[in-house]
Length: 87
Image (cartoon, rainbow, N blue to C red; front, side, top):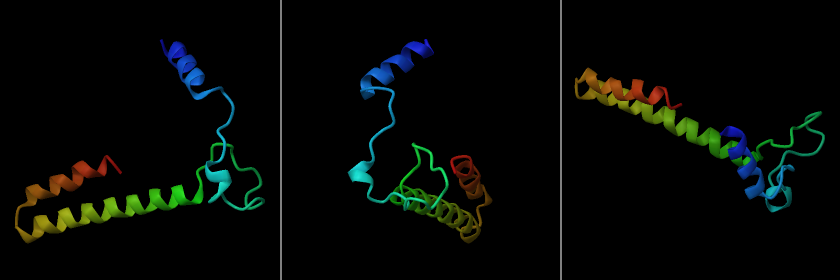
């Protein structure tokens, strides 16, 4: 059941408390930047990786669309439509 799985996850993680900051909080937003940052907020380096991955994925979608035009095979546009749901 879901409750048993949750109990196992809490036990395996060492408790239900909030995780400790990675590397002592290097990369966290400066204190006082937001009134109340949630305890599970992502660090700045994590946001940079997330954003750059998203941009890379969108560029790949655009290249697949342009390839369809270059080889005159509109079926290749289906790759772009398939990638859209994974964004």
